[in-house]
Image 1 (cartoon, one colour):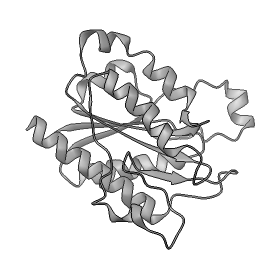
Image 2 (cartoon, rainbow, N blue to C red):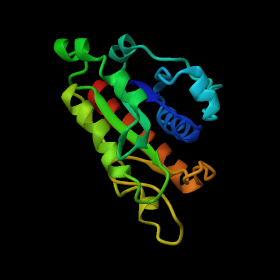
Image 3 (tube, rainbow, N blue to C red):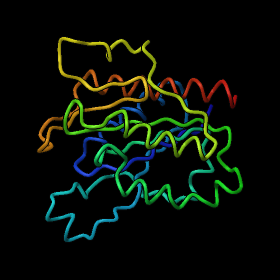
Amino acid sequence: MPRILVLYYSTYGHIEQMAAAVAAGARETGATVDVKRVPETAPEDVARAGHFKLDQAAPVATVADLEAYDAIIVGTPTRYGRMSSQMASFLDQTGGLWMRGALNGKVGAAFTSTASQHGGQETTLFSVITNLLHLGLVVVGLPYSFQGQLKLDEVTGGSPYGATTIAAGDGSRQPTENELAGARFQGRHVAAIASKLFD
């Protein structure tokens, strides 16, 4: 079975929850799944003053970790319609892997959160996907076979480019069951594709 890394950055815990759901979905297929987070780059006093969630259980990843996996699923909140600086900083350090083609042919995917429905979910996903393509990964999205992204009876995240959630401007909204279902679906889907490529 494939080895899958769910690699994320989460300021307030929304992406942390989505990462857990992505991992749970991937594990349903029998895949080996690790969940790791990228380092916090904000000074600790700034993070504490901003009420960042600093007590996350996932271990901190290193760039060298990436090569060990068959699939990498990247989660980050949006920052002005693009990935967070913490995730960008981490991915900016992968030049050695890129130069060696170390990630060529592996499976990649992305998930995100925004404050509002139209706060840049798809552009943030594409900001991650662009990096994945440059690194040589085969990108997998969230197909419309996950029917939850077509719901009109509730406010919900979800995009064919990856699972998403909406956090509200003050972070008070938590991922809904439909959004977590999308994340689990994406985890299963990535694992299934990776299994076809690497079994």
